[in-house]
Length: 421
Ligand SMILES: *Cc1c(COP(=O)(O)O)cnc(C)c1O
Ligand SMILES: [Zn+2]
Image (cartoon, rainbow, N blue to C red; front, side, top):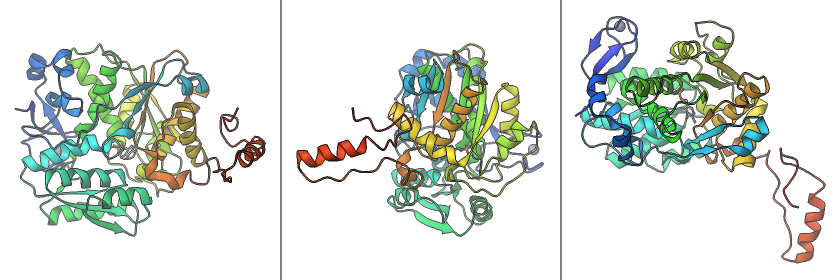
């Protein structure tokens, strides 16, 4: 049995029964899942959660699904105390939520797990999506697991790693010459023609709820408390709003204390419609034409942009856009300090964190969580010509000694040269 009682329009408040529809038929506002929190409060305890599976399904009471779930083991990823990166940035209590290690190497497994379970409940026979890359991989993998057909639509200029990481699951994979926003527009039209579960279109209300688990896990891993600061990458802005929603749900249910987390939204300068609006104090989003190496965040017309702005204001948080040339640096910094190889979206987060810490907006003694949402193996292009060179030698000690002596003269690491001594 699920505690999700139906859907409600975020604009006019009208309620609807569960259905594979994400837009209010009266005012075209987005629909959001409604829960019976009184019912949840009666059963949900820290202990019940801790006895659950080591995946997002330990929070099933707070997710809009019933019965058997589609499960490739999404979630319950590590929260790492990042002492080295913290020292570098001047932050004494920095944590990394490492969502690179999900089954398809990004946080999208959380949302797709919920969406594909719901699609099967609705009796839909195919999963589909418009993707900036990571969603493609996750939809194809979950469809394989669930025995559903998959139709995956991507912009044709995606990174090779994301294309191959999707193709291997054998979906119908369609690349379109155009931006993500054009792919999304086409998929909106296709969702009227085909009886498929477009996870981020007609199933979007359910899909988005999966992101709340990134709030629940962090609170649980911090010993049942909310962080002081959370820094989160944004494309459509959905993840950002749902982390805030998830933290506040735990407080409503008495699982954690009242939430005072400041939410910081990060985007790449080449596609920063939400961050720009937040930084200029505007409450409207001006769509942009994306031109960024952070392709997973390249949504020029973000569906949840205005709601993300509300969260920035409500939480007294902030926003940052990372200059394009700092993104690969952010990726390398995270790798060199903590041994975590994140994709470009992670580089955006680290670059923004560095700026927010340097300007004193995020302070030294505050418990700060940086959300790292995808793995670097999918975006090799971004750093291919920016990492230390491979040293080629002959198989002799002399050859190695000679190479080593030469190498010390050309430091290439951000942290002051190759660690050879
Ligand atoms: C999709 C994605 C995001 C942002 O998702 P939204 O909910 O659309 O804001 C962040 N990081 C990565 C790696 C992603 O793939
Ligand atoms: Zn409405």
